Length: 48
Image 1 (spheres, rainbow, N blue to C red):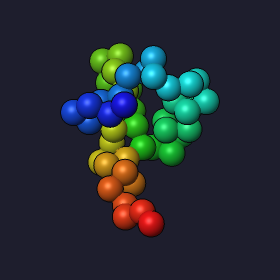
Image 2: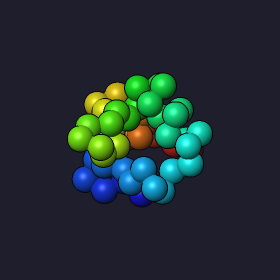
Image 3: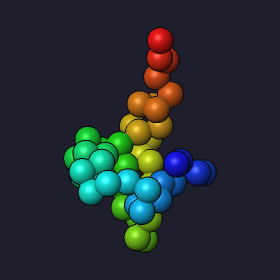
Image 4: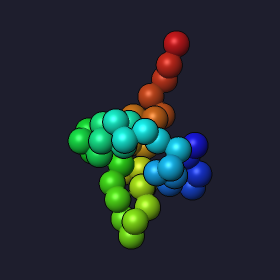
């Protein structure tokens, strides 16, 4: 779950974590997984 632009690493599988980091949608800062600006734009895309 995303809370204040941060994700809990414990809530993600290792594979999900790797994908987010590889795509540049999230980064590790001070041991916390933080959504990047690119990730924010991705998460706010309209869905149907």
